[in-house]
Structure formats: structure tokens, C-alpha cells
Length: 406
Image (cartoon, rainbow, N blue to C red; front, side):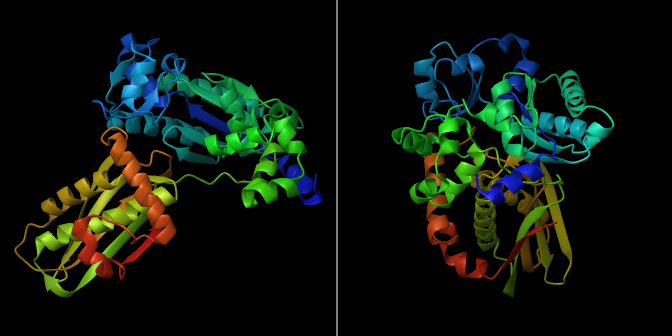
């Protein structure tokens, strides 16, 4: 192992990181609402032939059902599965409840998605056992929320996350200091975060199937094969991860606004402008793997009177969801027959999250379209593609002020 990597591993030994993940979160919430669903193969997702799976129970997973799979294919694999359309309002509500329980106890925590949390409890072992404290918090969450949650504890975020995965469903695992590499060694390489289907196939073709084989590979060879990702992969296989727990706050936001050269009363243009703003902000959320749960629209009249309205929504980064709410807020705001000089859109209460699009409202084709559009934007810039109604507005949008705010 390189000296600098050894030094990093030694620095990590002083840390104690807890990872908690609500098991099959959407499914668990549905079972909490209707106990008759417990123990049955259950699919949460869009209805109809073109819907997709947002989540599924462990009973359905035994048949090969997985997230993002077309519902029609899932039902072919598991014909007896029950399909529930899903309720993001309920899921967001339960997510906030669990967040509040953790916030009341943890000295430092990060909400990495709607159902996933990290806690840095380094130094707490001076007063009582860290694993005991984390276990008691886990039991409190289960008791007060009624939801199953799995837990992993180790010296860093990487090993703790893998430990949580190995303890599912509804279990807990403590990886003692100094045993991180031996814990990871026998696992398949696809158990390492960041190793997806494509990377795992590539590694399998190279004869690398376990983490131990990967960790013993010369880092230079992996770098030559995978570039910078090869170095990161080697470090993870060697249980090296100095990523900090980022303190959670719901105050961060992303916003954009446009001041017109000439005061306007053209509401059709303003709706198109809001659509373009929503597209840009939603793409920024997805590119940073974030979700918002609050949408606000602001207008400033020609006499400089400024008004705004906001609405709490289920966690989302979907274009069409944000556009819909933005238009509704604008209709409620614009009640005077007076020209407008400025219009703005703000998304707030941001959290890290992977639910980048509305799996309940979008069809399989729409999801693939969004993913293709995001790839084009990543390659050619955020203005590379958009809805037809926004094409004439792009030069105007480019002059907007937009940024993440604390």
C-alpha cells in the first residue's frame, strides 16, 4: 500500500461513522399504512403497461424484480405481485419524522437521501459505547416510526454503508477497527459503492470478482484500465475513505430570476420563462444528486412591489413536477393588472438523493428521455436541449442570476 494511503487509513481509525438506511422504504411505508400488505410480493410504481418500478418488497426481489424495471416485465417475473401506485406525500412525511428523531440525538448527521443517513459520533466512546448508542437510536427509530431500519458502524462512510447492506433486512453490523479490509475481502466487487453493472462486468472479464483480488491489484494497472476511477476503486477496495459527514441543513436552496428589459404583462411568455427556469434548476439538482421539497415563485411589479408564494412538495427533481407547481404558484400570485419587471423561481429544503425523476408519474419512455436529455446537457451544456416553448427564451435565461445558496 502506498505510504500516503496508509497515512489516510491511520487517520480514519480515530473516526466512528454510523450509516443507517430505511429498508425498502416505500414498501415499508405502504405496509405501515396497510398491514395486509406485509409479507407479500409488492411493487411500488406507475400503473399501466408503461409504468416503472420505484421500489419493491424483498419477496418480489426474490423473483428478480428491481427498481427502474418496467412494471410489465416485473409482473412477468412475479405474476402474483401487488402493484401500488405510491404516495410521495406519505413517503416525504415519514422521511421527515425519522430525520427529526435523528436530529434530536445525533451530534452531527448527514441526510444523504430520502431514506439514508450518516452520523459522525467520533469521541463518544469516551462516555459510552458508540455501538450501544447507535443501536439504541436505531431501536428508537423503529419504535417511534414503525419502520425497519438497518445500520452499519465503522471508521468511515464507505465501510459503514457496505456493512449496512450486509445487515439487511432490519439488522445491524459493527465492523471493529482494524478489521475493515478482512470484512470487505470476501465480498463481490459489485458490493462496493460506485461499482455498477458496467464496471462489474469489466472487472469480471478481467478475472476480478472479489474485493480481496481487487485490493491486491497494482493501483497503476487499475488506473491504466479505468483512469481516475481506477484509483478511487482501489482505495475503496482497501477500505480507504476520508469523506466527511456533511452537516445536514434544510436551509440550502437554488434559485434563478430574470429582470425584463421592458416591463411586461405577457403572461404566456412568463409561463414559458418559468418552464425554462424549472428545466435548468431541475437539471442542476439532478447533476448534483439533490432533491428539493419546497418550490417558490417571486414576481416584482413595475412599481417595485414584490410578492412571492411557496409550497411544500414531496422530494423531487423532476422537470414536469417543478414546472407544474411553478405555474400554479404564478397563477395564484399574479392577481393585479399591472406590468411585471422581474420573475424568479427558487427550490429549497435540498437533500442529497438519487430519486432524480418522478417514477410514479413518468413512463419508461419519459424516464429514458430525461436521462438522454441530461446526457446531452452534461456533454454540450445546460442549454443544449429543452422544451420547444423555451427555445426563444434561452438567450434571456442565460443572463439570469442562479446559484446554490446557504
